[in-house]
Image (cartoon, rainbow, N blue to C red; front, top):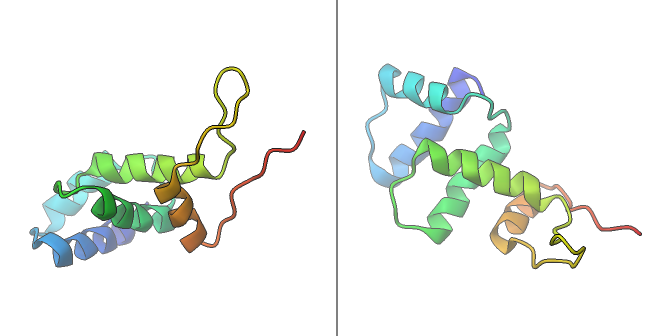
Length: 106
């Protein structure tokens, strides 16, 4: 994500928890989120975190949320090939993004 997108994430979080947002904070978050390139999923990760936790949102939560959203697009199976329950919060985020989870085809 670029600096403008990181700033948008932080501004949304500022509305929620009144955190200060300045250039140093933006640059630190940018460093912590290197490799996270799905801005829409990152915004959904904020919603996911708020629905599951009262903890202050940190870069780890954004990264974890994006990974969960991406994983929700894939079928989940255990090591024996049994289907696993979907991550319902991540599937809902995926649906809000207009992305459809992939079905297992034999």
